Image (cartoon, rainbow, N blue to C red; front, side):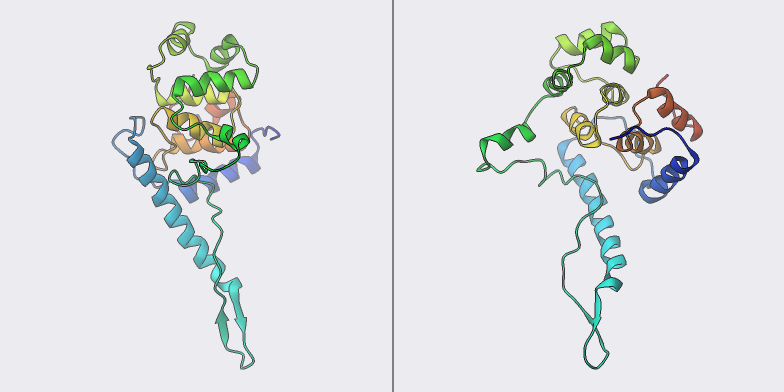
Length: 218
């Protein structure tokens, strides 16, 4: 994806994205680790709402007229265009799928293993990642050497930006540590929007966070 820079058009896109997705109801602490059931419930609720809205919007275009000029609704399934991931269905590969498909998602992969797999796949150096993410070398060493260590949600997002991960990769990395993008957090949504649009420069992400008076990375 070609990286975008902050323009008036991009700011308007962000405003529209927040208007569409921000619930305005903050949880007690959106940075707390979520249980798998809580993450599944969060995404399920988002999908149900978006599917209902999409079905209502698309119903007009599915009206046809019979010979007596009476409207007839055509039965058809409305495709899900929400962009959110169904944790129950889309992440678990078919057990009978060909062997080459098994690498698409590794069931039970830990945060530690996923992080360093991504670093290796993208041919990055540890120093490149923690310097760009603004993470202390000692903290990164702790992440590498302690497989059970789970850093803060904001730290994981900084790592995702430093590695230029796409939205799916970032979502998976967050999930592996028990986190998820929260529609109750405007900060989460701004970072999600940046990742979706290929904005990986943390200074530019901070500029957008600061514009909405949210906590910045630096």
